[in-house]
Structures are given as C-alpha cells and as structure tokens.
Image 1 (cartoon, rainbow, N blue to C red):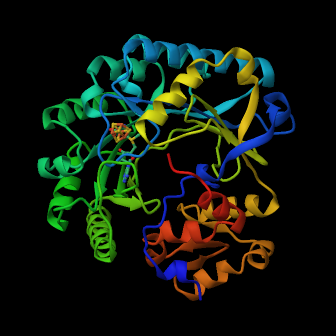
Image 2 (cartoon, rainbow, N blue to C red):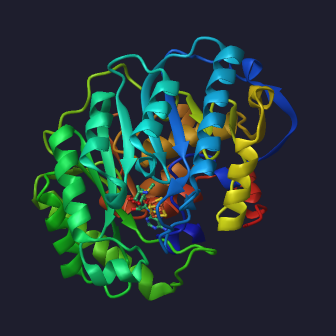
Image 3 (cartoon, rainbow, N blue to C red):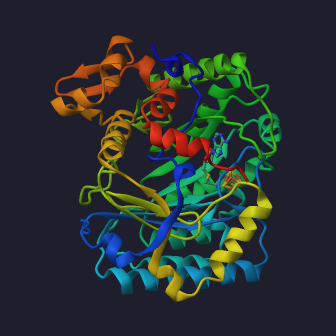
Length: 423
Ligand SMILES: C[S@@+](CC[C@H](N)C(=O)[O-])C[C@H]1O[C@@H](n2cnc3c(N)ncnc32)[C@H](O)[C@@H]1O
Ligand code: SF4
C-alpha cells in the first residue's frame, strides 16, 4: 500500500505537471521555431507574467519582487516586448483562444504600463482574458481600462476579511481598499473571482466561514479556497500533524457553506456559483492544449517540451533573475534553454493528473487503466469512482487532491524535483 496517500493531505499543489522544480537547463538551447514546428497552434493559451507586487506577503512563495523602482519595471516591460516580437518572428502564426495576465500583481503597473502589456499580447477580439489584481493596487480606472481592453475575468486575492488573520499572514491590507476594489470589479466584470486562505494561526471554522460570507456580498462567480502552505524562505513558519487536521476541518466547513449557498465544487480549491456564465469561446483543454508564456516566471507547454526561465523564491535571487531577463537581447529570446522533456509516460500522467484533479474527471480508456494501476488503487480506497465513462474524485479524494497529484507523478519527475536546489 502506498504510504504517500496515507500521509499528509497537503503535500503539494499540482496546478501544472510536471512541477517547475523538475525543469533543468537543456543540453542545447532549442530554437522556438523548432520547438513549435509540429505542434497544433490554433487553440493556445497565452500567459503573461508580471513579477511585481506592492509588498511581499509573509506566506507567498510566488515568483515576484516587492516594490521595484520605476526603472526596473520599465526595463522589464521593454524585455517583454522584445520577447513577444522574437516569439512571433521565430514561430510564425499563433492563435490564442484563452489568455491571462498574472503575477505577482499585474495591477501594480500603471494604466499606461498595463496598456503596453495588453498591446503586446495582440489578442483577437473576444478571446477570454483573465487578470489578477490585489486590493491596494486596484483603482476604478484600472478596472475600467481592463474591462475596456477585453478582460472577461478579474481575480483578486483577499485571503481573509479578519484583520488578525491578515496580520498573521503578514499581509498589510485595509478593508476599505478591499471593498473599493471589489465594488469596481463587480461593476465591470461578469466573472469575478476571489481568493481566500485557510489554515491561518488563530483562524476558526467560524472566522473562516465569516470571511466566505463577507466575500459572498459581492456574489463572486468563482471562489478559490487555498489551504495555507508554508514554504522555506517565506516569512512564516508552521507545521505538524494537527495543522493538517485543522486545515481539513476548515476546508470541510468552507466547502459545506459554499455548497449550501449556491456554489458547486470544481476542484479542491475552486468553487463556481451555480448558473455563472462561462464565456463562449473556442474550447481550450488544459490537459492537452499548448500554452505560450511570456515574462520571466512564465512557462510554455508543448506536447513534448515544457520550458521557462529559471526561477527562485528568495528575494535577492528573484531580483537577479528579473534583471537578467530584462537584459536579454532579442536573439536570446529565440531559444528555449531551460525546461523538461516529456516522454509518453509523462504525457499520460499529465493528462490523468490534470483531468482527475478537476471536475472534468478522466475519460477512461483501457490503456490508462493498464498503464497506471494506481487508478484502480484510487477506486479501491474510495478516493475515486466511476461516473459513466469517467473516473472522478469522490469527496474523500477531492480533499486529498494535494496528496493524489504528487503520488501520480512519474519517478523521473519526483527525482528531478528532489534534486532542485531551493534558493
Ligand atoms: C498571484 S496571487 C493573487 C493576486 C494578488 N497578487 C494578491 O495577492 O492579491 C495568487 C493566490 O495564491 C494564493 N497563495 C499564494 N501563496 C500561497 C500559500 N503559500 N499558501 C496558500 N495560498 C497561497 C493566494 O490566495 C493568492 O491570492
Ligand atoms: S500574495 Fe499576491 S500580493 Fe502578496 S506577495 Fe504573493 S503575489 Fe504578491
């Protein structure tokens, strides 16, 4: 029997597979024209990374630098434009059917800078576009600009409505800023998303549910409930078995409240308002379709190669990587030089993991079951069940998504991740 499934439910959030800590320098840089030559290029996702924030929250290990001076931001945006241009020159036609600007905090940028980012994306009209915001950087003018420029989904990190919990998270955030930002966002978008965190020191089921209740005042179309992870090199420090139980209890309380109040569960973290409109657009299946990332923390996915820049968590390293990215010339952007090559096994595992961990579920074919006996074990343990042709996680499986994902990784990916040097 597999110990990993019996251990902590909070082993790792697999929002992509393989995890970026499995990436390494490629033996030889590969021209992007070659990388994309035989790939489908008519239903891609475009992701642009803005690695700046007004502040560094105590819990956050995303690739971002707090409070950069104006010149650093300007140099970064110049480099983004060079990268976008080099990509198009090297690869030729790319058709995007989904797009996102994430971070960090894109709304750390001024209106003029946000416009530059949207310009370089060159999206066709009507392509669904998601943008991440944070309360203190959001102004009604920026929200209006984003809506005018085609943003169809606006997503904001709130984390908690309880001041003591924000202090625990080391996230300086004022309620009036949150309310102003949410009012503006609600007025301008049909898809509003809000992030909350559970597992904060001192948080109880009652205070967590009170934050969810506060969030529902803006009738968000989506809510993400994130279990708090405390990683090395962030400012917090927590751990231990009882904290797992605490997070599980909070998750169950939050989930029950949302299910009873008009929301459906899409994945362990994501809840969607019943009846919320999903933007009409050509289909994009994250399990299979490609992604083009622009910016120093962005990843790009083809069927056989995932690539990105190098990344780090510690702030001095992050700043160094942003500087190095900003200094790159147009020619250097023509190549992929850091990434992970996926063979048949990793392609299969990627499809299985990403399908199972979302409400899509896995459309089972005989080969999957033969290649991956772990799927039968999930059923035996009551963590997954058949729903017609599909295998879907049960409630017990959903709440253990962050154990099931890492457990389904290939040995090669797990070994590469273990060998990654934290910095
Ligand atoms: C890019 S941020 C959202 C936008 C914006 N930067 C903000 O903080 O308002 C993505 C989300 O990831 C979640 N997150 C980041 N680090 C986390 C951690 N260590 N544990 C749990 N959730 C985390 C937070 O809920 C955060 O809102
Ligand atoms: S949580 Fe958001 S605002 Fe805070 S450091 Fe991370 S990306 Fe920046």
